[in-house]
Length: 373
Ligand code: HEC
Ligand SMILES: [Cu+2]
Image (cartoon, rainbow, N blue to C red; front, top):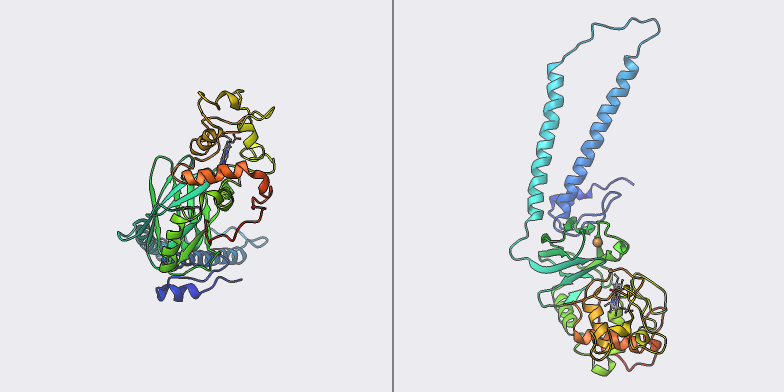
């Protein structure tokens, strides 16, 4: 498949998007046309000079090969001023243009506009957390269409890097430092599809869990999504919390915690209620050899097992479970008390959930529409 030339017309028309080719995915941000133009341009210049240099080389090798019995030629020209200056000056002019256009666009891509919609991004082993001005958070990125969006990014642990190939943007997310990235997409994504968003800096075992989606929504849908995102939990009555909200929140824990006893990055939740409640012979153990019952109980560090569970979610690693590393990200600021209550309720009623999928198995009254991605 030959790379498409349509990118030229797209760039000239200042169109937001460019078609995909064997080299590039389809472009879907206002940067795409210029980035692609630059990329293909350098690419074709390389093809051209590759052909010129190798062609001339092969031609000369054949033409000036030494024939049998021929004396070595000693009167060949040693210098040719015009030729030599042209192969210095022509490439120089080409790279000056490349530098100019490249630097101009780099500065443009590096400087978020003042009116950008700001979303805070926290990278953690191994999840992204996107936080919106309303306080709502999400695991996938949701952005309004046709508006510059600025990501203000930081890392809680190691070096990560946020990459949205279709938007032609990529930026490292560095611990102890804030980095910015901005883009504008003028194309709404199909519901439930979204564009790829990667962590593109290998950050350990769960690195691939940081492959998420960017959803570009029309302004009214975006606002509706934001409102719902902030309220979905409030709408659920207390007594339905564990089966309505539990599985939705569990989706964020599933990558590390199974329900069926399988050991993952974190301990399975199977039996967690029993081992925290000191059921006969089922007391849990911590990495330092001490038992759960040494910290849980009246007058101890955690007065109730629920306190212990809550603390495990907000301050993971303060008590390391035996056989596991300190690999859990904190959910402080992401799960409020109601959400934590839902999770604890789910742990208590674990036998009512499908151990593979986390789906609620009992007949539930028709659920109000809530979504949490
Ligand atoms: C990246 C992997 C990871 C994710 C995601 C994760 N955890 Fe953990 N979790 C761990 C690890 C590892 C441990 C054991 C080490 C420790 O105690 O900190 C653990 C321990 C726990 C414990 C204590 C378990 C016990 O048996 O005593 C609880 C409770 C818990 N996690 C809840 C959650 C909840 C709720 C979520 C989702 C909202 C979640 N975790 C998401 C890795 C993870
Ligand atoms: Cu990462």
